[in-house]
Figure 1 (cartoon, helix red, strand yellow):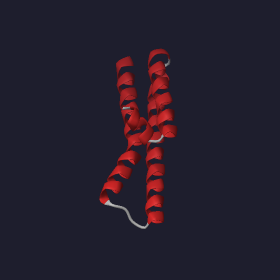
Figure 2 (figure 1 turned 30 degrees about the horizontal axis):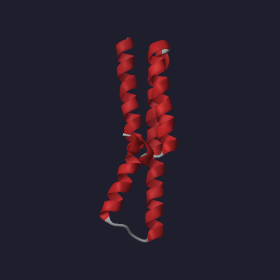
Figure 3 (figure 1 turned 60 degrees about the horizontal axis):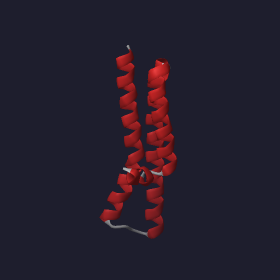
Figure 4 (figure 1 turned 180 degrees about the vertical axis):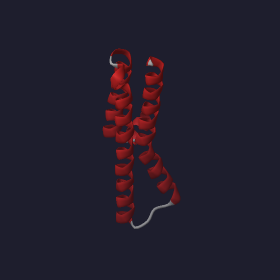
Length: 100
C-alpha cells in the first residue's frame, strides 16, 4: 500500500491524505464542511492526474518512444491521485448523508 502512495507522487498523495484526515475530523465535529472537503480532494486528485500525464508525455517526448508496458505503468501511476481523491469524495458524501 505504501508503494502506491509513493507511486502516485508523495506531494499529491500527502495532500490528499491530509484532506482525508480533515474530512474525517469534519464529519465528526464540523459536518457542514465535509462535502466541501471531499470536493476539494476530488479536484486535487484530478490536478494530480493532469500533472502526472503531463510529466509522462514529457518523458515520452524526450525519449522518443516507449514500450506499451512503460505506457501502462506511467498511466497507472498518473491515475492514483485521482482515484484516491475520488475515494475521499465518496467517503465525504457518505458521511454527509449519514449526518443528515
